[in-house]
Length: 144
Image 1 (cartoon, helix red, strand yellow):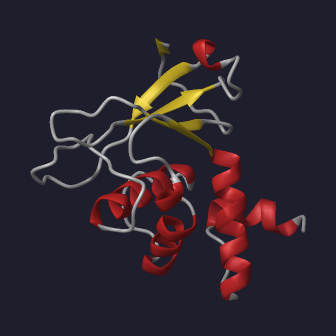
Image 2 (cartoon, helix red, strand yellow):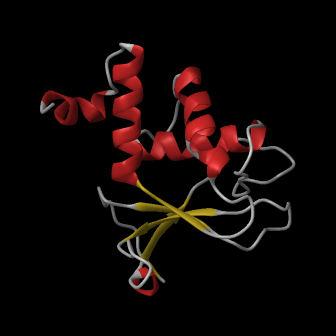
């Protein structure tokens, strides 16, 4: 993977398989490398940060269950996918994302989530809840 600071609408969230010193796993954001045979050509864009200064460190995320660790991962992934650099997401959206998506990822080992799949999931959740989608998604929802 080559490091490059690019904005890519089709970026991929990649949970790395090796645990860090806090037993969590970093999540990196990549461009390209969507399929199993293309992953070695992925371009590293940046690492997600938790936004908290707790004992687990700023790059330590957890998935594979429903708890505080996966909620931090959900918040970081959703904020990034929705184009927000700071702030928060609707707590019900975060909880549903943990329940529907992150709790089903392997707690150990690698995983990949495409931004476009996350955005489709968010749009479906907004429709299901009867609320307006986030601003970044308005062009997507206008076409349905």
